[in-house]
Amino acid sequence: MKKILTNTIIMLVVIVGGYIIYDQVINDETTEEQNSNSVTVEVTNGNSNAETNSAVLINQAVTAENTNTNSSVQIETGNANGNANTNISQNTIVTAQTIDDSAIQLAAKQTGYCEALAPADWSFISNAESTGADLFSPDRSLHAGWGISAVYTSMYPEVESFLSAWLSYAFTGSFDSSGFTLGTAQEIYEGFIQREFTTSTGRQGIAIYKTYNFGDPTMYVVSVYMADAVSDQWTASGATPFSVALSLRCVSQLRPTTSSVDVSSSDPGSSSDNPEVSLSDRWTEAIMGYENVYSPSTGDHYEAPLNSLWETGPEGSGYYRTLPGGGYEKLERGFGDY
Image (cartoon, rainbow, N blue to C red):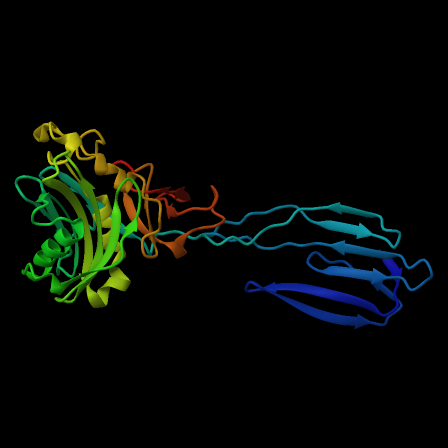
């Protein structure tokens, strides 16, 4: 289409490496023919009617794992009288964001009447009575554990005094609680309390506990989950033992509601045999920069860093893994059923 041009300004729009670069060209010629598939051309007629025609063609490449997505063209025309006709279609640049290279995979583990999710190379031990269980990284720098105990009020009237003494013994080998420091109590839900701690042996971590009463004023029962690491690794690696501790599920007859449970035929993942399943079932907070997710098709569990979230994923915002045959699977949040 030919037009009489006066000081025509042509805005060339070029997309290079994710950036938009504008190149302004001034054309003083009186006649110009414009044929373009990748530029925005604005032509202004200098007469009194001041008619303006604009043709817009936007074509942005879409790439995601060598996949191209095409769409039709956006063409907009308008004039000085305010009339406009627009046909809209635009491609969007998509970059796949998956957990493939950054997540920590967790394996289902079992010992005695306890189960947990932990890295495959972690060890898992429990005592014969299933009143205590521990998981360790190969070098024992990371640890997660659980224990349940009946406590006489004559010895430890308050649960804080019991925790300070017994956790001190667990980490320092001494009941002298000066080697163990408990932080401020934070209520979570359903009676669970969370507290940070440090030890004189150079470890740091979090304890989550719940107190049960049998209606006997002379005693109470405390169930304690622990996650810890050597102090200089806690900030960077503490999310793993924290997640492992939350996933720990054990059956015990010491809880009032499970005092008559047949431990030999019980299921640690059943809320009727182990009411503390709710600790992982209902945990929805991110854990020190990570979220627990699992594959609905394989049941595999992962600790996914928050920066691996795909905001514009194929099935909406969430965590994704790449499928062996191509494509992506959106992962479920939480610990799931294992």
